[in-house]
Image (cartoon, rainbow, N blue to C red; front, side, top):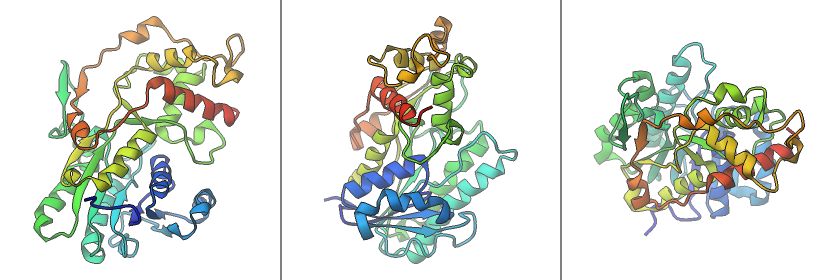
Length: 335
C-alpha cells in the first residue's frame, strides 16, 4: 500500500527553484495537492499562473528566512508529506556559511517543525547533493550511500549528517520516516521565465556556457562533469519515493550516467535536424566543436546506484534526448 497516495497534500520547499518547479508540476499531474514555500510571493507570482489550471490544488505560502527558528511551523500544518528542496547552490558565496547555514538550519529546522506542528506528516524527503558523498581520490573508487564526504566537512554539514543525527535520535517517537535523494548535476529544460542565460540556475548555466556559447566553451572543456541526471527523471524518482514503503529511512543515489563536457558537445553537434538552428555551422554563433583531448578526462570516482534500481527502478533519458530538449528550450528563448 502506498505511503503517500495520490490526493494527499505535499509541502514542497523552495518552490520557485529549477528542480522544485518540475517537481510541483509532476506531483499535480499525479493528483497530489501541493503547497509550495517561497521567500516572496511577488517574485514567484509566475508559479500561480503556471499552475492555475489546477485551481485550489496548488497554493503558495511565504517562508522569508529558512534559517530562523520555527520558520516552517505554519507551513507544515495539514500536510501529509514534505519534500525539502530549498537550499542555495552557487559559486558566488564569499563565506562558506552563506551556503552551510541555510542548508543545515533549513533542513533540520523543517524536521523540528514537523515534530511540533505536523502530526499528519508520514514521510519527509530531502533533496541533497551528491557532494555530501563524493570525495577526492587519486585512484578509482566506487562510492555508495554509506559514504560521506569527510574530506570536505562543510559539504557534509551542508546536507549530510545533521539531518540523519536528528532523525535517528528521535526515530522511535516520530510519526514520519525520512528519505534522502542524492542527485548529481541536474540538467534538462527549465520551466522558469528567465530572459537571459545569466539568470539560469547554476547547472543549466554551466551547460549553456560549456556546450552552446562558443566564447566560453573552451574554459569548461577539460573539466570532468563526472555524473548527471535529467531533472524530469529525478522528479519522477522523487515522486515515487513518496509511494514506495521501502524508501523509508534510506539515502538513495539517483544518477543517469557519467560524462565529460566533450560528450555533451559531441551530442549537441550530432543532432539532426538541429534543435537550435540559430547556431548553425558557419555562423558566428555556431556550436563549439571542442577538442579531441576533451574526451581523455578520466572518471576516477564512480557510483553504485543499485539501491535506486532496487527501490525506485528509475528510468533515465539518454544524453541525446536531454541535449535535444535543452537546445530546443534555448532556441525558443532566442538564445
